Amino acid sequence: MPDSDRRVLAGVLALSAVALLARVVALGARVTHWDESRVGYWILRYAATGEYTYHAGLGGPFLVHANRLVFDLVGASDASLRVVVALVGGLLPLTAWLFRERLRPAETVSLAAVLALNPLLLYYSRFARPTVLLAAFAFAAFAFFVRARETGARRHAYAGVLALAFAFATTRVVLVYVLAWGLAAVLALDPFLLRARVRGESRAEALVARLDAVHRGLRSWGADVAGGAALFLAVLGLAYAPRPDLWRALGDPARLPELVRATGHLIRTSLDTRAWEHSHSYVEFLRGDLSALAAGAAVVCALGVAGFLVDRYGEGGPRPLVSFAGYWTIVALVVLPIVPSVQVPWTMAHVVVALALPAAVGAGRLVALGASALRDGDRVSGAVAGVVALCVVGWVVASGASAAFVHPQSGPLVEYGQPSGDLDAPLADAETAIAANDGGPDVLYYGEHFHATTTPSDAPGDSFYEPKHWLWRMPLPWYFERMGANATSTTSPSALDGETPPVVVTLAENYGEVNSRLDGYHASAYRLTQTDTATVFFVRNETA
Image (cartoon, rainbow, N blue to C red; front, top):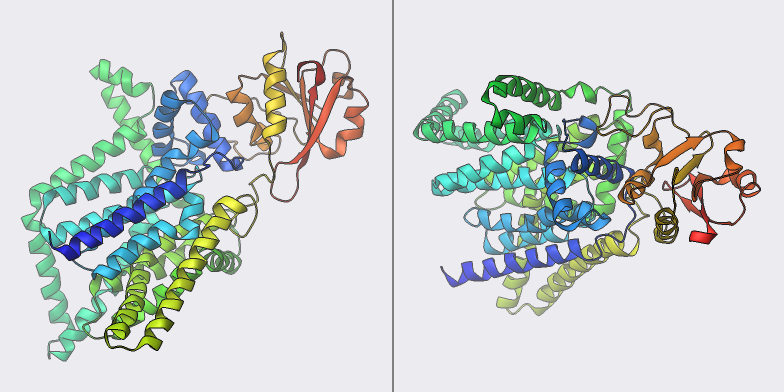
């Protein structure tokens, strides 16, 4: 391996180590978001019952199965709930090494730096949602396919298929990648057709020749295409197959046809885009997405635009890889505001990974300008380039540290369902009281807001977001389920008389009514959402 490659590899490995460290330190410090706690609750039920059937409200099955294994190994906690996403996000910078033949050394290291240090990717890599999993698996699949095309090595192609199958097992948003890649491939033909015109060839002839070359290339990979398709379907089938039906079918082959039908139905359900048919304002959601990019990826956006333009109009350009990534970014940014039912900043992680390649070119160009100035003895230009680079890195590191560690429960990257403040003290008191409870319910939810007409279930139902659903108590069911607590709810004040459970949870507006009826309890207040849902925990003193 040449010395230049060794230096690049060392830089990529070092940045990945930094990325892993930044993602696992104090991983359980932040209270779980509603989405995290909902997924965590049903993984606990899956672990307890062995039953799992895909439901879109939990995302794809990858995180569920992976966390089931993690919970079995190390137990359930806020940190273990997030560790799978943290590890995948931390290893993502390693994919930069796969582009070393298509990127210059400084660009390859810069790509690893973008994937390791970007504040938006960092924050959501510490978050138990499938967003970063999808972004990482899809980007890795793309990187492996590029490497397979570059080297002809079949192992890279199969690794790409495996990563793509994992991506399809995370969330239906993977279809945005399929659409973006398809359109980007068409748009990336523009430079090729332009060069053909300069050579005096017609665009039609050039396009036919290009398609014929692609066909010949795929034909030489015929057996591997079939093998890759089989691998893809096998992984997807294992991921989506309902449990314990899968294990029963493996023991009784007569059950296999029914298992295949059920699994196929679940896969089709997971890819049903009718769930994206919302009535929200596209412009409003796009504005929110741009705000999230400005808050968590301003540097990547600036470097990405600069890198795309420099590569397109600079000497030797445009490179197909950079053009493809630029068009991929544009399509993703245009399509993503359609997808969610509520405005959420985490969807912009999909834009950041696409923009990372042009941004790496922009950063590499900045490094090259500084190095060239120093070689030419131009200390002023070299100093300016150094100061700019230092400011860029400093802003990224400071923003990432602020979002992930200093203010992880407030700020522009935080969505409404994130509780604010520290819930450790009331939960610790509640756990002590619940452990000492001799019998009967452990937790009583009081008042209209927390009273539910549904009961906790072993698997998610279709009435996920209906009023009076017990999930409106999130994130508390995740924590109380870990304690083994039995919960009930009421709107009747008389239920507070006599034998009351050791823990009573109610909105702050009911404090006076509840406090006057409870004797020997102490109270603490907390906000279960970002800006409201002020809640009071009453915990019995004798057992606290």
